[in-house]
Image 1 (cartoon, rainbow, N blue to C red):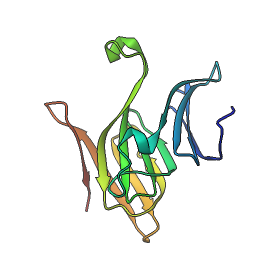
Image 2 (cartoon, helix red, strand yellow):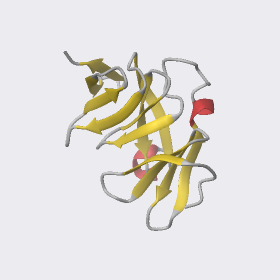
Image 3 (spheres, rainbow, N blue to C red):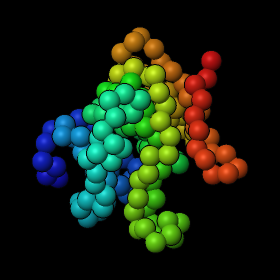
Image 4 (cartoon, one colour):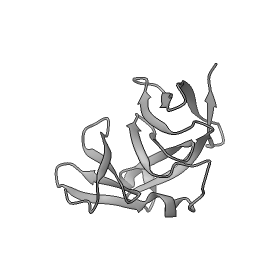
Length: 149
């Protein structure tokens, strides 16, 4: 794959059909593995308004769970992204990856990992912490997160 800049991190989708790549130039690409072609690409900072804090800036870690993708790095936050990969459940959009929640005050995030078959996310940061967050969808469809004690 020619991404145009350094690749910081990669992560396969749970079904192995897609590969997420984060690059030094703030790019996040989703590639269809069998075809080696990008299906979705964004300059992450521009996608979310170039906020200085409380959002993920340069992506240094990706965790692709069953429902959500978590993005961590600089910016003292983890962005929770919901992938939509087929027209069957996406409406008119064939592919979209919307930021549906942001977990703030995480520090610089170096590692992310979903508990298998759950919406529980481990967040490792440079402040000597491993935070555990639960991501939930409410009855109204709103996605929220909660750091567990």
